[in-house]
Length: 461
Image (tube, rainbow, N blue to C red):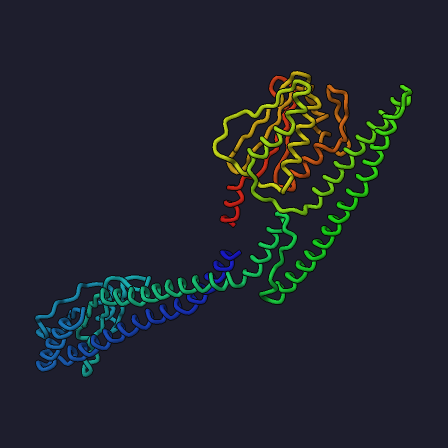
């Protein structure tokens, strides 16, 4: 926007300069042409009068005047007609202008070009004897226009240099004015950028013209309202977490107590089924609460050490994998210590959900492979299992809430794991993709922004 404003400002200044300087330059050029023509014509007419008199005094004066004129000006005097008058002066060539002067008593002016002027100005003036009322000769002045051309370049060159200097000054002033005019818009953009990163406390200063002040106040009011709503949702999530988890925990303890005190095999089986449903409900509630927190976007993305978090989560899940003989391995060559942008706890939650699904579908004695792949501005974390994989139709529904696939263990999940992963990754500016693992199974790839990509985007903006 600043560039467009500066271009428009320079364009208007250039038009103003052109409208002012070009007519003035043309006027000065026309004046130079007219003054030169008038001066040369007067000299030629004076010499023609001396030639027309024909006496020795006039002829001597003509000789001296023509010699002095040729010495002091870039013009040469040529004379024809009166015999013996100014014999040292050259004679003009026979042409249409000379014929018009001698036969028709017409004075002619020839600039040598239809565009401004040529290399020479040629003025031919007839010499008419007053007593005899006839043309006795002609005087021609051939005037070099080299000095006029130099003055012409001075006229136009000076104005061209002045115009360039004015445009440079106008560009510098335009940049300053444009930056001042767009400062409120940049402040609003900074506020929007902070909002996109999850900082709901960002506010824009109310500055600039009335229109931007009104917009800033409106956005600030909307931000206050949004912050209030998110805070209320956060309180609701916390309250719901407490209110839902507490009775479920109490119910599970009660069922465990009942199971300990019952000897009837059929009753014990019913209690175990009820306990399994309570466990499943607890997982469902936890998934819903995590999804609600993710949709609330209450935290801003921050740099996190990717490898440290991956190794930590793998250490947490290895005991559960060892019970079934499943190997969990971190593979691939990783240069440096890549950091990614993610909200606090988001990456942990995503890895837990993906590893949980991978462990559920993995056969006993199988392998779960985790790969970290830095790719320029993003970093990919892939989890590959050796389970049955998914068909294309299943992959298209895998991120739907409450959709559950069936693993080899025969235990269905809550149907929210991948939905939570996708929501958290999207909030962090990343993506999640499902592909077939080499040799069978499923590959879940979480792609997040690297810290270097954020730094480059900030500097480029």
